Image (cartoon, rainbow, N blue to C red; front, side, top):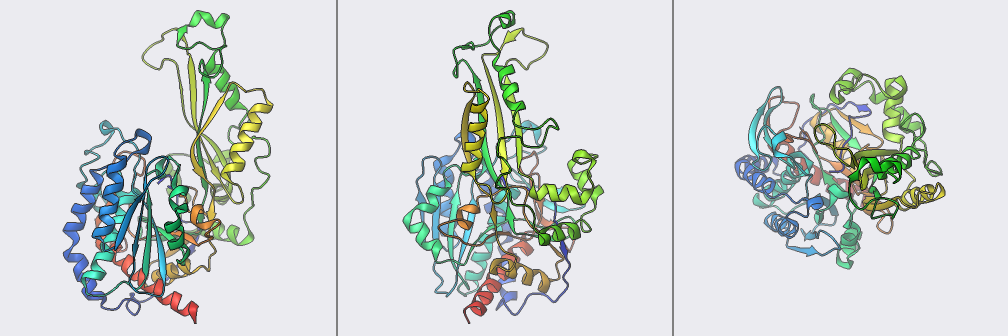
Length: 503
């Protein structure tokens, strides 16, 4: 997901206990069904990987939605419908188990772009590949972000029902095909009357995830940064002082360069240090970390060695040579203005002596509480206008604000209980530095708790050779079967905690 992606857990709450049992009736029978269905679950995941929906490329838009609808119906949802939007459609499904508790589930069925030449195995084949030190994995675009975890959740639903039992909770599923372009039209899906009414009955919404590290530690996230994707364009299409196409570079003596103009505009967005946002009023509504959140960050630094974090990212130092704890505080609390890419003129071998007719920068904001998408975009446009950059066109392609859920929310308590009873050491991060559109549930009018949950492991999201663990070589790290059973257990714990809350 655009989510996507927090570096590591932030705080350790080590927990050792007995295996989950009481909350999951007939657990061994369900586990046996999960094991029996393993091959068909893997094949279903391979089939899903083979159908990539890529919003940025307008690829498999209707097909992806139809397939998502089919997956929901196959998993036991009694009804599923496609919800049209101004872009890629969403999917809405409900499963009425006759329970007293209703739980919301968020899926994304789209994936990021990929370049096959960069992969060691074809990105749409979902090949099973042995990964040294990890075990057997499935490799393919969307394997961990998020089709693997989502397929494990669907397998859990199938197994419970195949055991002859009803689910302990009713389910409301909402899925979108534009998460990877910052959920451009997802709010329209949730705003549909039937969708909003169904979600309003739920106790909260979660997205399936693979939240274990290489040593088996799990992660609980209490929120995520918001994200806004946009482009800045300068050229003949934005002003007649620039050429309509690339022209001979000698003309730069008398014709302005879109490339230089874009560079000048970009330079105003950050301070001279190259990273601190300098947009007028940018920090006006930024909420600083609380004492509790700082405590979590400081304790969490002990769980995740600094050397491991640097090795994972391929860096040798943090901004300003800051210490590790300070870098982690910045990671969860700092709003950012990032350049994803710059496009202008000729970039092939040698030179071409051209004056580009167009220059474009692809950027993103990462937002923290209490910023909003609308505020960030308005401040960007006002900032540029104030400096006379009326020839710089701003196009917002998607985005949403940050989300946050209280540590004592039922969905979070249920995760803690599961980890404690299963003996899984876990950690809490105040905020994921990546993003997902939880604010659409978390904010008005629904105002629901929103979280991520799931055991299992994977990597390479948005990158070549994306993978999801199928059979783990480490007993502390969950493979597909164990991750599926974790969803089974979680549903029963959620139902039990909701029952206690009603008393």
